[in-house]
Image (spheres, rainbow, N blue to C red):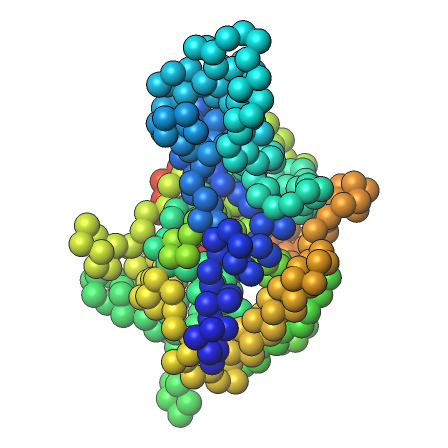
Length: 431
């Protein structure tokens, strides 16, 4: 358990808070590039700051404050120009740094524009994701994790805003045992309620006849590595020679889960809301001709709640819907002063210790882990993951488990990328 004060320290993310200052040292995804196709100006809230993301007439991205400093009109309705975003009220124009560069009603030789500036932050696009950096200078390099650099893959992006604090989402990633319960027995209960018992998973019970489930954990382990924590598991019918233990899958500090060929970013919007981003690279068969993706598809992931905020059982038949249930029912910010941790929570304990260590480094004026400065090191950041020995075989296994369509893997994968519907994203790999 944590004290109330410790919980506050790890969960509050606004400007000037310890965790807010740590998370500002990292590039954070704030949306998908294709979201700007229909409307080149998009509201963004991140780490407690309300901003607008825009694309100017030259195609350049900018991220600035959402309110004009003149008469406090919303910049969400600003006019994209060649050199920036113009306020709709009186035409003041601001560039990507937040600097005012034009005031139409002022004298041409006025120095007033040079003295008016709002918030403005660096933004970069990588593989269809738009990233922002809200921290101090010098600005670090945007990490080129392996899936951003791979060839022979198709990619897509999904996102939703989850009404709870970022930390309870991240801690779920350090909790392997929930898989066999939340995504096993509870999943079966959901299918029973929905009248779909034919899809239920069967479980072994000592002393009775039955089928061993692949999700029954026999052993879990965690160890720190260069970029965060490696999570390992041995489940029923498997051994330590299998990639789930021998290689494991990484949690990248501070707020990324890597599972299979999927990144899950947990970006704090504010203290009680989190932008959850799914970025997936789908490996294709060796030698296959992979179509060029000029634009990376984006889909909105539905929350498993109805208009009254109650859980919609129809959206609880999948991993992501079940996870979201577990996250948001802990409350807007989980009260960790009341928790009772057990042996299976050692991954969560390790992660909290790493958070404390990196907070201390930043508070002492140092630079935390996973801040990249060397362009050569950043060309391709190779990560351990369960499918690295044979990505296509790993992808085949995952599709077979989710669809049962053995021998039809490539068409299924391509169809998954082509579809934008949220139900596709909600399937998800076992994490």
